[in-house]
Length: 472
Image 1 (tube, rainbow, N blue to C red):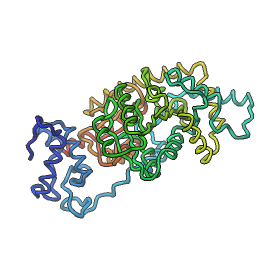
Image 2: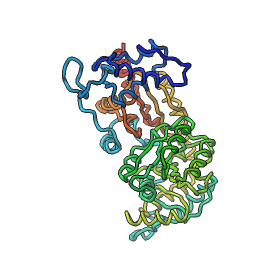
Image 3: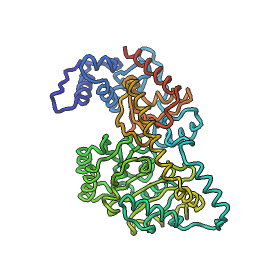
Image 4: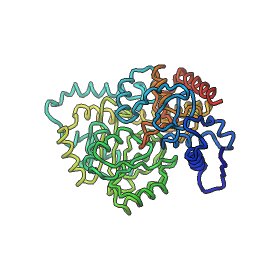
């Protein structure tokens, strides 16, 4: 069908995309024509199946092809968004995969028996005993909790945060720490302070769905910076900076969701240089720091909060219900963020902040974190091995954090797969949700702590077998 050359500077994926577009535009491939299966195309042209998956995904996103469940890929008909060839029957409507859909699904499906796509840890992986001890202590002490807390948050917990950051070479005082209702409120406060309608804002791609929706709601022009296993696609980032003038870059250098990639120190240094050169701020969302067994610098520690606002959270390692997060920033910025916090909600809950303080000053806190890291590392090895044995491609294998980002050549549409999984009692994390420009993709986010159930693996094996039968 095409002549491909690995010796050209043009990547093979781009060669396939450009070649098929030319064949479609020249009517060599007629509207409604079925393309070779992914495996057949790969075998015929001597390329990997993942190269074909990526090329077909791009052509679907660009409107040249349509993907039909259990049927394959077809040249798109003009004015026909999905009629099945020869039947005239419309396909089922494609659901809107965005942050609103994601949040709705998360909380409507959180009681499903299997949750490999969720963003939290199982209750028995958390520090529930310490929460109970802290609550009992709080009750017995009988502090006056009938008024409002401090706008900055509970002073004792802010001091603990400042001391913890100092251990990681970020020198801050307690008055540079603002406690928030989880990291979500911290992101919202920073977005309201830093982003005005029409501003260009950089984000990780793939990245956090709720942040994307939040920024778009604020009127920002959201531009994605591609992630790699070692951090960022720096040439792509520099090209974006030459084209745009961003005001801020919201990023997650460490154990990033959904890829769990970790930015190298060299990438952190280069990012700070580019921020200085192009005059934009960096918002470092470091909510998985306590899951990292390695000792590594952060953007904030390298910059000492000159161009960086630093965000953290206790929700991932203690309990999501506590909703205790924090941010650290320059004093002038922090004063403005405190005012925004008071305007929108007066203060955060001193009760939950005192409970969190009791947990992180519990004598077993550090032992809990060590045990949690070891448990996550083992889960990474187990789940990663099983995914590889099924033929999945892994974006990165960090053996830390909560996630694995993976795709399979015979499961080209993770959204369709996720709908089917819900019917089987499984909550998956379809890749479309995490992309800055949502499009059909095979990528899935697996929470390793929730991916131990044999029913999940039987479901995946069955779907892969069916996909292989369709493509043959």
